[in-house]
Length: 286
Picture 1: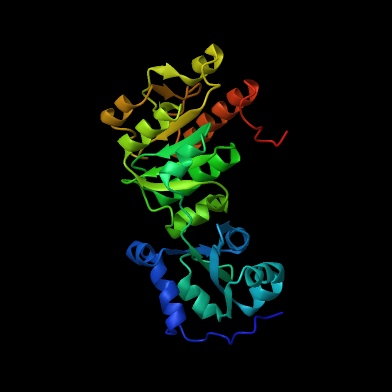
Picture 2: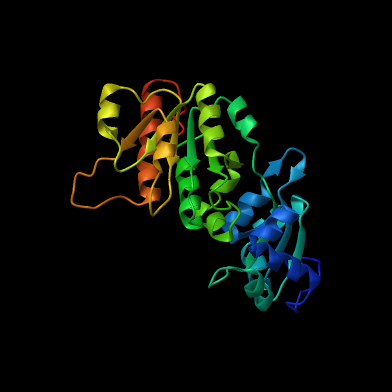
């Protein structure tokens, strides 16, 4: 069942041009809008609201995708989004992927003020300090969501969480948990500690071993993990701000773990310890 609006044939259409510009960070920041591509992201956006405002404001969809994902198109309409039937050329022009899936949504920014994150008294937080790769940032956000974290915080030196690659890598998790952006690392660490959260730096050269910390029973309380840049890790001045620097043990011959893998290990270790301590909801829903 195609949308009622006319097909947008020309990539030079003002609506298409406005959406295409959102691939650039300065336009996203000016408009406070970003792109969500593919059925999973669009579905999550259609079901998300920030207060009284729907997150999804506009949807471009090909005829084939409108028929295949009629339920998503219906959810978008129900959310109040403007739905445009678009040619494949228009979708390709807006999309930032090599093989577009026929749906591209325009969404409102949904970041949460850092003070609201602190007011919620989070028990598990991922803090991204100087993380520059959008794919890694989105994957860490997905890991945090899966582990049951209550928030993700990106420092002012980190990548834009609304970068299309970061949005895709989050696989919808961007719409699931509070995300605070642009927070100076010192302010983030001080605020979390003042909220009763233990702040741990994840670093391959850490002087504490994650397995040892679990064995000693130190991981059951509220915890924020600080993850650093993919290439050079956390600088000494950032490590010095934290309560401890913890390494993930390497039991085999691998030189190291990449950022997203290390983040998954650390976040799940904390989630398990917190569940065992009876202070955190189970990530399996039990």
